[in-house]
Length: 113
Image (cartoon, rainbow, N blue to C red; front, top):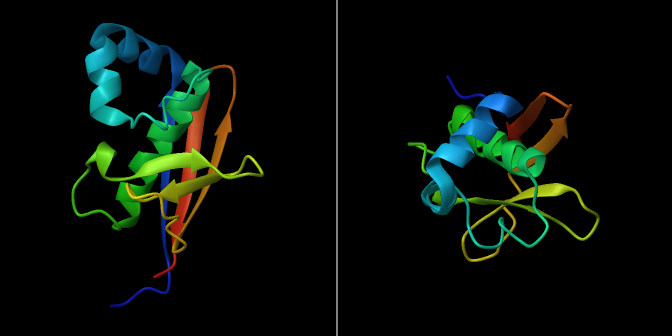
């Protein structure tokens, strides 16, 4: 059965994510985020939101395996997040929304093939 669109959703606890980043250090960051995603001034909420977006992309079925470095989550000129290929092209068939609270970060992705 072919679906007109697929939706992925992910929710991250910020305390758990902070511990993961602290325990994994630079190794964790290099394994999960591109240099562009780790731009100066990033914070734990933004990173958690980007990681949730990567997980949500995988949950749509767009990626066959969860490989965080196969895509980037970058903000466009308006500040809205976009899914971007490693060669810098926005993947128009994926729409992403990211939100944060003091304790969580969440992302929803719609894949409209």
